[in-house]
Length: 279
Picture 1 (cartoon, helix red, strand yellow):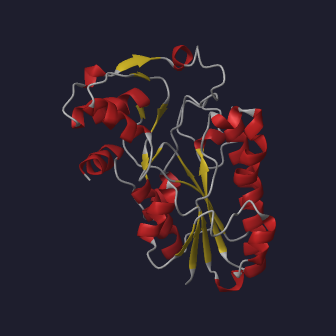
Picture 2 (cartoon, rainbow, N blue to C red; picture 1 turned 180 degrees about the horizontal axis):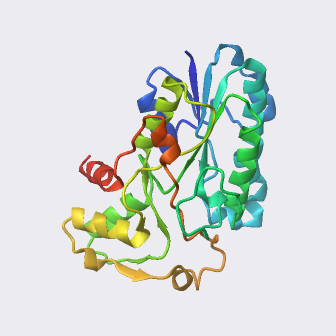
C-alpha cells in the first residue's frame, strides 16, 4: 500500500511520518494542495491512501479579513482538490478536522453526528472542508482537539513559562482533552489497518476532561512548580481586551465511544503528557 502524507511538516504531519515510515511525505513546497493544477498534475494512480495534515491552524489570524482567501484555500479548497483526486484514483482520503466546527454549547461530549455550528472563521472553514471530505466514499474524517506534538503548542509554551519562573493566567472554563499527535497518528493507523467502516471518527486522548488551566497546572507540577502558580480566569475576562480573537467553544469534549468500539483505546491524556514532557 502506498501512503501519501500532505502537510508533512506540521505537528500532525511529523507524527504521521513516524507512524507511517514508508509513506511519501510532502510539504507545501513539494505539493501545494491549494493549487488545483498542481494537485491534478500529481501521479495519483500509484497512491492508495492520502493522509491530509495540511491546514490553516492559526485560529485568531483567521479572523483577519486579509487572510480570508488563504484560510479558505487551505481548509476548504485544498480538501476539494484532494477529494477530486482520490475519487478519480480510488484512493482512501484521511482528513483531520476539529471540534471548532461545534459551538460548544452541548453539556455532554459531542458525538460524531452532532450538528456543526461554528463560532469562528476557522471553525467555519473546517466545517466546509469536512463537507468536501465526506463527498468521498472512501474517507475517514478524523475530528480531534487541542493538538500537542512536535512544534509550537500550549503544553510546550506552559513548560517554557514554568522553567522561566513565570506564573501565567489561563482560562478555566474551556473544557476538553489534549490530543498528543503520536496517539492521533496511531488511531489513524488503526482505522486503516483494521479497515474500519468509512466515516467520521472522534479521536482525542482519553481521561477526565479538563480546562486549559488544569492542563497548565499539570505541566507546572511536572516541571516542579506548584500547580497554584497557574492563575485562573474566565474566557470572557481573558479575551475582554482581545476583540480580534476568535470565539472559542467552551465544551471541546468529544465522545470517543465510536473509535473505542473499533478496538482502539486512546491513552489517558495525563499519561501521554508525562511521557511528552519526559521526552
